[in-house]
Image (cartoon, rainbow, N blue to C red; front, side, top):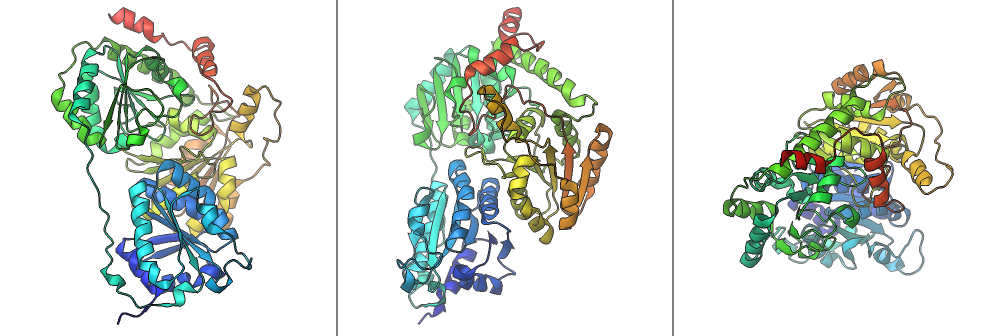
Length: 573
């Protein structure tokens, strides 16, 4: 008869599901699981973080980067509470994450025992699967089902494990359980495809809005855009689906976006959304017909009233469309958009190459570009820094991750930790503001401890810069947005890493080059000028209080010497 401790069975199942590392903090109600992890430390690496929030954010980032399940654990009570922010990030961005949460002994459940919380109730909103293990014989089934559900529904699965359960013996035939992940191929209905073809053939000014769901279909997306003569606008999490300097790429949309993307949406007579559920209707066309490609039918027409919904994988759907569409000969609209984008790039390049002290954030991103490797992973924090990276970093083959829907500050460092664990041979770069980094800075020492070389660039203006401009636009006086001065470079050295403080323009590039050669975690602490990221607000997660009028005012009234798209179309016609 089979006879193993439930804790051993848990580890065996995690290995079957190809889990190779777990983030967390040891503690009394999870220590029996920690003991089992100790015995397999050569197979599953335990990453001890300094705060459970970082563990959950790192697990979410790992899932976003790799598509594999991220795993984090905590004790009951306060440890489990600390996980929530990172778990909501995973939920919002559709990342599969498994939580192993400790709990008080089974015999003490419901007695208001020390550190006991109603964890099932607490996790209910954030989780797609949320069960407490009440019997050791349940454990194999529940572990498999939790992981399957996290993958299938792209969300958070929580297993709450009372402290005594891992020590009990499992005697059932759990080895017959299968750790397989079943997948299905979705493809649109023929009628919908034919209707889409009719709309595309009729359109004279089509525009593509591509999100992260098109990331695995770059070649098909490029062919599609070329065939129908459509410029491509990208969502923030979709940045990098095609190279930023691609001739069809108009950049991002919305308050982090470009003027050409804004104008293209104003002029289009057909919006084609691919792998995105762009959340801000105000930045989409007023009344143009629409086509949406998405593998999730619940996303079709959720944000924009499309005429045709193509439920299927973006790669396969675009392949079919490419085979059945003729190349459009009228390319006036596309060429006008391309001219507008070239003018935009020339305009923002002036700020990037300016040599000035105090240093401008645009200059930092421009010089960072020169030392970032082709296959690097960029983990971008939330705040003004997001705007500077979205506008000024030109992705080629790099991968970028961010907390795009929850938009939580503090995601940059955990993302870089996850990136280095996922891809040890690739360069990991975190780009953070001083406000976001200071929320999780304690875990820079985690990167040092586990020998995870990375570059952390901090744009240091001693302010909660995004909040400052939110207050100003709302007509309020600035209040409590200044941050106390802090020398992040010295902090890096105290932690055992390398640190470089940059206060003058001529120090910037040399510091970045030194950071690129470092064999340990390094912080480049750049003192920057306090400059507003006009039109003033990151799109994802922080749009309340701003309106389309703000963006129109910036593009129509601010001194930007760029010809409007209508004028370019008229001249080319």
